[in-house]
Length: 336
Image 1 (cartoon, helix red, strand yellow):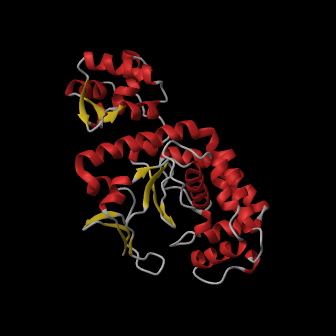
Image 2 (cartoon, helix red, strand yellow):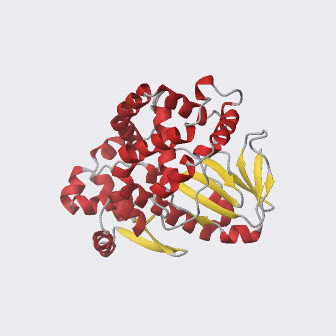
Image 3 (tube, one colour):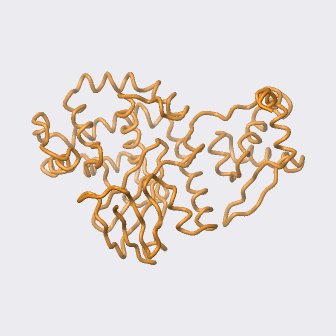
């Protein structure tokens, strides 16, 4: 078991960080997993994989050295550190992807090979004994960013921002134990200022006392995660929670759509679990003003209620709202 012992100042100064590069690395990992199988992906990720796997496979088939590099860099128990650099720490989305990728491209070749020895847990394949590995890693990530992430980035960023809002509310309600324990498999708050980061035991997962460091939590939309550290910066990259990571739309029953209109009905359907205005904006793709107007109408009609949670206001369906959603869904009637 690996854990970090974190002092109170580190926890107080920790922050959520948005990283386009981390989102791109997570997407590359998802595409690489998808070359084997993606039946376990959620519907939104399956649709994304269906759209981009053919081009990714074609690219890798045309460049077997880079294909081997990616497989070696994402080992079974450890990533090659140079391909998953620790974010710089800007919480407002800066630096942009083009700034972040420079750190990978400028990795010394000998360090890249050393990192690969750890990720493959053995000798580096002969085909990877070359000096252009950092450039190749940067190039494939630039391709993934341009082809498979950038077209979706505005929506993905809204999903990430919504997750940060939800985590912050969870932190204000239940403290660090509540906010951190379900971030990623194997991670939980142990008490005594210790954060378990993995259940695996080994030299690559050492327990560390890390007072006074910059601790960052970095959400990504693909269902993957990792930890990294560099000098005085430590990061936990984790998948956005539950429905937030699903880039598909919530199914709105046709009768409910006809009664309330598609946009307002979509908001009501999403409020089966409490959500903030920011989360609803992210999940629906509607503007803040539109979501606010829909919420006011639903509140005035008694179909939803609201409650404050820390700095956020959460909205949720009332019994009347639940009954209306059930009545509008023929599948619910058959199930009953």
